[in-house]
Length: 174
Image 1 (cartoon, helix red, strand yellow):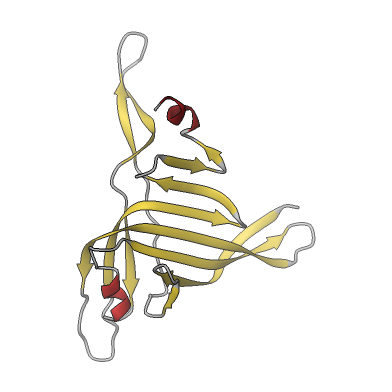
Image 2: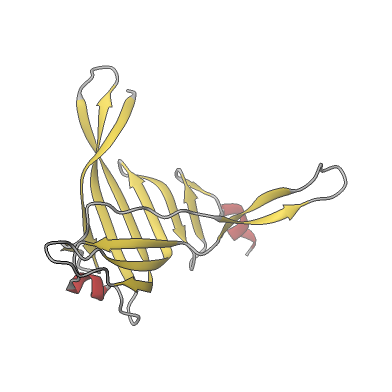
C-alpha cells in the first residue's frame, strides 16, 4: 500500500519522567538540524577537496522549545540539576493512494539534553510573550508508525538511521 503523507493533524508535548502534558507550548516546534562533523580529503588522485562526513560524529545540536507565555513549564526546562526530557506525540495524516482514504499514523519525537539559553520574550497588552527555551540535545529519537527513523545518543555511542545501526562496525572495535 502506497501512502501519501499530508500534514501533522495534531500533536502534544509531554515533559519529564512522568510525561505530564505541557499546555503552554506554541503551535509550532522546529525540529533540529543535524550537521555532521566532516574531514577534508585531499591528495593525489582527488581533484580538489571533498568534505567527507565522519559517521556518528555531529556538531553541537540545539533546538528551541517555544512557549506562548511565561509559564512554570518553561522554567522547569531551565533546571541544570536534571536533564531536560520532552516527548512530542503527534498524528500524521496521510492518504492511501489505492483507496484515496484518509488515514493516520503516529509520530513521536523524544529529546533529552540541557538548557543552554532562555528568551523571556516580550510583554505587550493582549499579546503572547513568545518565551523560548534553547536546549542542547544529547539524545533524540524520531519514530513514524512505530519505526525508528533516527536515534542519536551522543553519550552512549548510538546512531541509528532508518532502523540500521550506523555504528555497529565502529562499536565492535571500541
